[in-house]
Image (cartoon, rainbow, N blue to C red; front, side, top):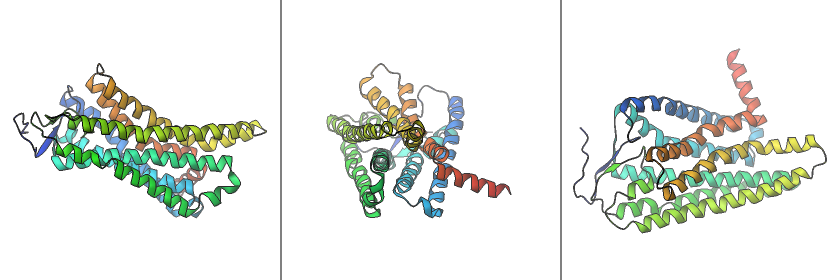
Length: 316
């Protein structure tokens, strides 16, 4: 039996994750089927992207380096969430150690911030490739790509580092039951019997510091890209050039729209049902790692051709 503690304690040894509150165990089993399929696709797809880029010398270019970073980020992000979630649904293993909960919390938000930064790096790559193609190789050299990658990683690591430390400092004297499928930041700190304004405000500041500059930079990049595309002399040239951005645009929409919607509904949508919010959060965290390799695999010519070649070799 699970020990769901509702008495006073300041340092809980563990938390209890409820999964989707209000749903029966049978419903959890059915929900776990598409979630497991999403995880398998994410693992297989992102490892395939990494393998293809590693083997193909002609793919050793800035766009594909950033794409590899995106694949690694998606692998870590989905693995931080889904194995524990599936253990809840399949084995009723709801208990998670206090330190493990804080580690999961940190990894989820850290790598989500990294993913946003990688999308900015990909937007910069597309901007240079379309607006200044003759200087693409001189602007995005390997050292520059390495510096951009390091900046993306350090921003995610350092900006989100206060999350677990702030969460650890609060006394938890109400309950150790988290009405969620994973250790969400606000879902954890709201269990504290103290003024959590510092955690709440820092969470909002971190969200703004990541999303506002990133969305602004991507928007400005694509304004310039669209100007360059519409200045091309023929319709065929415009369509072909825009096609090189279509994968990136699809990934951006799949990531930012659910992310912003989920963040706003959690903070300001007090009348939104809890299960709806939890579903939205899970979709924005779990759908992009599954979709990203599919989008780039289908819409990027070099990767698509290599995939067809691999499967045709296996079929012979």
